[in-house]
Image (cartoon, rainbow, N blue to C red; front, side, top):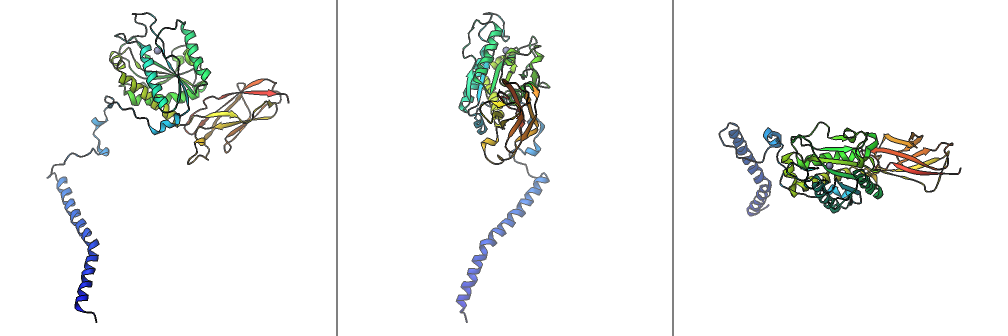
Length: 388
Ligand SMILES: [Zn+2]
């Protein structure tokens, strides 16, 4: 028979044990009931509501106002790593001053477009190089090269062609006789199909500039064909054999915008907007193609082309999935639709060369869209056809 003292100790132990969960439970119930009472009193309007963090579901309309840009900060986002190794040629539009002291390409108080274009290009180069991109400027000086205009523009495109650049970005600022207009436009060359890869970059550049500059006005369609400006388009885009885009971030003919464009911080905002656009463009994958075999092809046989969607080769989750839209594959031989089969698993197209194809170099064009809608950067391949 247990002694009384032992029984007491057991009871004490039991109480102590149950206290471990009983006390917090009781405290919780008390706090809950008190909180409920407080909430009811607040709801009845008897207690003042202290200002807390804004409820995103109840944000008042004035908080949606499009305001001045936020304080300047230029962090390099993690996704900018996809720019590593990408070759970009920046073309700061115009050069020097054609009529010293005159009004050519100047804002209302004399700010020269050529100078602003160069400043933005240099700042953009800083961002891009920090992310590991390979950058070349078509000009790094601001003095007259004494070249006629067309020759100069052809020379600028030639820099990108020689580099076999992944993108040529020509940097400009717009002007109008009317001092009011101020909006962003991005130009691609000729027809949408002819500039598919450049057009992809233009879309991302537009969103980057929208975010960075916060202009009051965006026009109905800010990505436009250069044929709106000239019958044959803009020479710098026309002469480029690589994806090419011309940016008119804002109007230096608008007095307020001209004042902003004088500010190096604002120039950096613009460069940062272009940079974010390019980083997002690179993140979406930059598709490329290559012949699977080396040496001459044979008429009547297949040529195999490897398709790199710009994403799978990164590895990671989903890398073994088809990241190419089959419906968007386009294959042309010497400008005419070609017979081909598409192997999604191997990421290849097999192009049948006609038996009648003569021995020489032929142009094979292979384009497709990856799952981001990105097109092949360099879709034209030379195929040497040898003796059967
Ligand atoms: Zn210009």
